[in-house]
Image 1: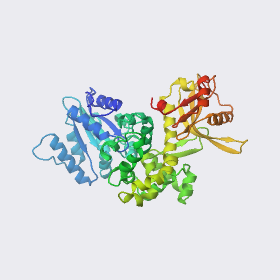
Image 2: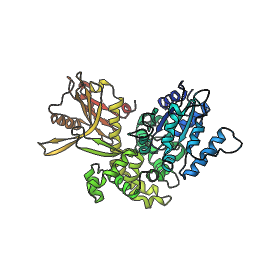
Image 3: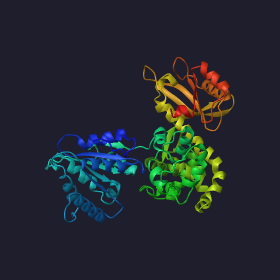
Image 4: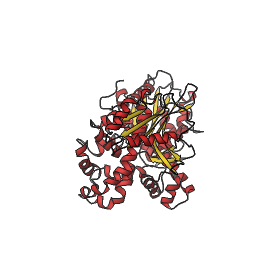
Length: 486
């Protein structure tokens, strides 16, 4: 089954779906497809069933009886029945579904499955019985795929003592596009423009086509105008998207509290105690909302590179970070059409410090973990994180933007390198000396024989003196935008 030309990238995801949909074996099989909203899951699955002649049903928020009626109508339409199918319960509906493929593998997709499971909690158990050998008397070869965007609900389908635990032959997560793939998707060749755009919209495919009608900045000089006309424009759907992302999550009840937590993190309050102080609450009060935000994929919890008991929270979706740091404080002004051009210059410093700077650091960590070869660090990176080290002489703490670890021949963790990232600053010898000082504060950390690498990232370039040092010292590595996107 050849991937349709309208599907961008997603080669591995398509290959896994095709493998599941065409596997030659008797009996039905189950697959689970999940991922955050707007990543193209339904687009992929719809292409799969169109290519293979399968059946897809997309659930909506409705009552149990209405959902069952909609399913019967959709299945009847697929089978070209003269009248809609009527089922008394989901036992009948699933039993009829399992008769669809008597002669060969056939993909059957139930999209937005959490909507059905919420109003009909018995449905996973019914599907489990249908997947058992005793429940497949028709010797069906249905390749059932359950899909959903509610990550906590989808994860719960196959965990612990859940009825479908151990039944799935496919657990596919459809991720956001990484920063390099996103640049190709947006058809942006200039690395600086690509990173600026990525800092706002991230790697969510739907934001380009459906939300701003393929409006792409033509270059760095057009970026500010693009933000005004495409992002801060109340007539564009992207304008309110960050607010709707929370409202669409079924596990979030007190939306105001969750918005406040995200606002604190976007403001730079990344530790739980700092978030609690920002909200005027006890630190223990935030355990549940932070856990929920992690479960729905909007927040990530990252351990410090040097101390596992010290950690920070970061927003995983750039658009959410941009909304809370830049848009939310001036929302009243932005809602009035035509005001964005006056507002954007006022909030640009906030964008640079609260959004773009941290995003650039995250991209640099991603490059170090997944794109940099062993020649950069003298080994293969296995863990990359930010960290904090104490400087007793200066009586201060020094933040390290990225710390790269690998494994030695005895499978023990070793320090491969440390790095610093500056977006809008020409990086010079002073930055290198800072890293050298930090390196001396890390005694007893085993590393490669040729020394801990010192990696400097910059979005604005490097001084001639630093370039001369790097040219003769392989321990010093310089990474600019061309290398990040190379």
